[in-house]
Length: 305
Picture 1 (cartoon, rainbow, N blue to C red):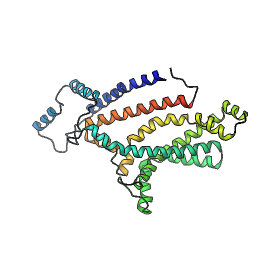
Picture 2 (picture 1 turned 90 degrees about the vertical axis):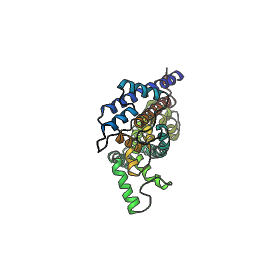
Picture 3 (picture 1 turned 45 degrees about the vertical axis):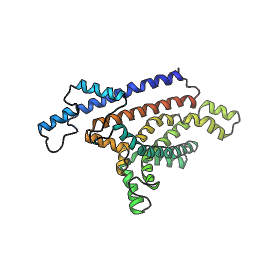
Picture 4 (picture 1 turned 180 degrees about the vertical axis):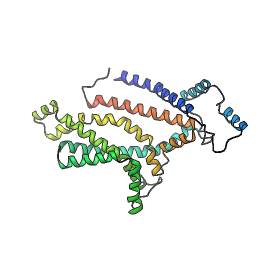
């Protein structure tokens, strides 16, 4: 297990640098620059800007300098947010996305797991059909439709909750529900499918034959194997949630990392784009590593060399 973890940890940095390299290449291929505006700049001004930011140097010199700074953990200053280091911008905006993302996934786990387990235990019942139909609806309705709909009903019609902005606990309810809806649907369906497969296994029949009560069979034997598909889904899903969902942050005016990332792309803010991409790629790989490690605890048959 330890050697497996060390090998995976050693792969995180080169994989993150590869992702940054591809992102940097795509930025340079795309037309335009961060200083392009509706009014054409005088040639002398444009030349001075390019010289100041090193854009007049050969591409391999720019790439080498960029990679050297990133290896040292320095992404430089933002081109649009003058004088603000990229690391500081990420540190300042990530907690907003993390708060909403963690709450959304906790809600998705609570509702999705509970619904999936009950639907599996009551297969072909009205609850099974109804919950899976609602789950399909949750998968079909995008959050850019659900978010404004919730604002319309609960903020503008009923006046129960604030429509937007970052404030107290009440301001978190609508964004969390909007963000968690699709994950509740996924987890409910994954849990149901996993539990149905496990509860028909030979070792479950053996446990029942030994005289164990149904609660012990379900919690001690069935649930550990049944939630493996859910654990597989958790890694990328949680990383995506912590990174922030752009649409939800836009709809509810949340100053999270996803919102900042879209602005950096529109502004062609290269250091900020690269910093956020590197941060998110490392986040995804770390969560996937944690998911792979958890397999060994959930299923004793899984071994790592």
